[in-house]
Image (cartoon, rainbow, N blue to C red; front, side, top):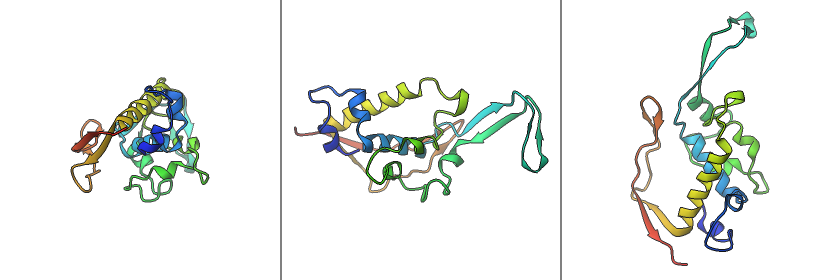
Length: 169
């Protein structure tokens, strides 16, 4: 997230969710972080009715299906060079946030069972991140962080050491 962009919004000392949501690069950075960090690698659904797939495959009501969220969020068909952190992939040619691309990312689930608090959570995450960037210059202790996830019940990012220096205003 670019601190100079955050400095231009909010007017006073307090930022608002609406002000931060108006920053396309801020929204794109959050979307890319969600894409890169699939904390819940699998999403589970149980069929409420019989379904017939292509090639005549039938699935009966009650069948449990697991969706590999990590694979969806790292599919090269949708995300060229998925191993790279590139917020720009969520921006349109004219620099606006492309909310349609956010629909391809599934950190909050999808469909009728999508997390009910997704918009509130997204807004609060954006607000917290922008508030931190507004107050501090942040640098990594290492030249290139290791983005390979730690596997367990879920996926977790590897710890990174950061340095926070108060920004001169």
